[in-house]
Length: 105
Image (cartoon, rainbow, N blue to C red; front, top):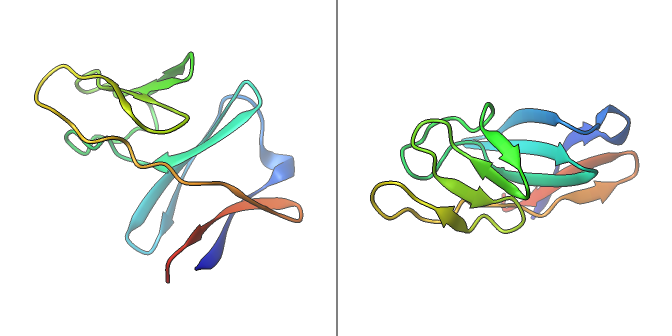
């Protein structure tokens, strides 16, 4: 496992949204109501970017087909078409004055 730094703590604030690319992995970091969430950056249903998705009440909703996922664990809360896998989420790691993620090399 390797630590990949993402953002300095001083830059985080409510309504923060930023996409990161680590090799072939696209990640989305979101802060809402003081909580941080890290997930894959595209909807698992059809691959639509989630950077502009609506985030509210502990969920993120894809703007393309309105699939809704839990921010906490990525489980599918609502689907509108065919079945869809859960949204992949990642644990945030704190290291000094920044946050990041541990990934397999």
